[in-house]
Length: 532
Image 1: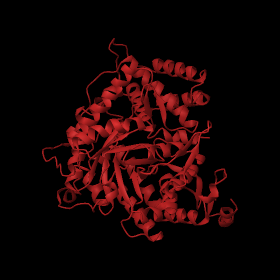
Image 2: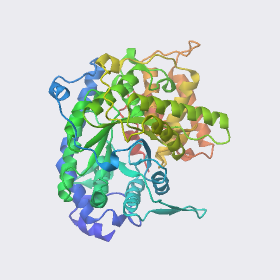
Image 3: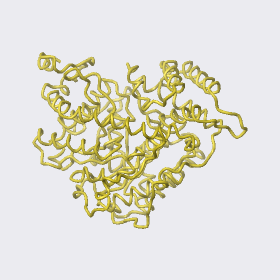
Image 4: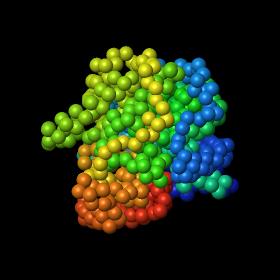
């Protein structure tokens, strides 16, 4: 990478990651200069907002409950709408998500889904190679040159009607340690967004395709306003018309559900909609109430979208979005087809159909799937019940949701199987993540960081804020947890399953985090320190 090395001679920008063939086309001097501009302008504000998250959580730990803001009442009660939605995003009935691996990008673009969300976040392990090679893969997808030949010689190419591309950068809290600017690691969010925008924004804008982004893990309107400022600056630097970059925000934290109007307002010139990021939302509920013994949740298999606090969240999102002219996207179907067992597969697909029927009849404008085989299943439901491109006209004025409805705990139980599944999923996912894979099939479900976080947070809360009993009245304790973790670690280590090389390292990390007196904010932060 001679060109980049020459540019970095002043040492204000340092590349710490190992360079590979082709990286020089992504990490060009001009691209790095663009990233430096974003970092220098916005990293201070980002850090202020992360400090505000800590202050907010400290208040929750002390007993405060999240609520709607008094200082933004005028925004919630005002009559305003978001900017018109581009033609390319008018129909989003089925969206497929996945990491930025080359073959997966091609399969997702060819899947028949309306949108492909290319994910640098929860379904990706942020190795330096994954992040930079992922940018190269997306550049090739945008310019039409992407293809892949499997070891068996099968050629994969993008067909004539690919899905519309939306990119999800990492959340505000995650660093990119391999690029250091003025002595400080750049935010993963700015690295992912900045490189993609620098290399692809002009080409996408010329084709009326954005660029479009999904914004994860926001907690407040101020965090949304920061993204708006980032996009404003990027458009100016790249000589794009103001408002060219469009965004969909995932409502996947409990604090954010109380600021949905405010988040839409902060991004009103460029926002397209909000999405029910259900798995991270459940994790955020657990984290927000980590010290509240009266708000323990049952095992994650029982925390489904029909429980009261999730139903209220979904319906309030639809009402809020449609009132402002924005789309309300539904959540993920994580099922994977079960081969060689027609009965089990049909039962799994029945769950998908029921979930998508619930979403479309409630008023959602589209939904997510994790596997290409689920695209026709979800599409059939939305085609039947939503023959028009969207249903933003369904205002849901019948929905009235209070603070208490959004935080009422779900009622249920913890079974031995549910407890054991949490240990296994957390362990196996973490082992795969440490090995560079962030999208992991386990028991016919596509698990990502969000579902691993639910498992981890539940284990911590049951152990530290219990006692929690099984149906036979045996109490969940650390001895039981340690035994289960050791058993699954040895099973994985002695297998040939993906992640087996990192089983013991993952077990040590999960054990340490679970025994700690305080629930760690994110699994991926301490795991990142151990990432190869």
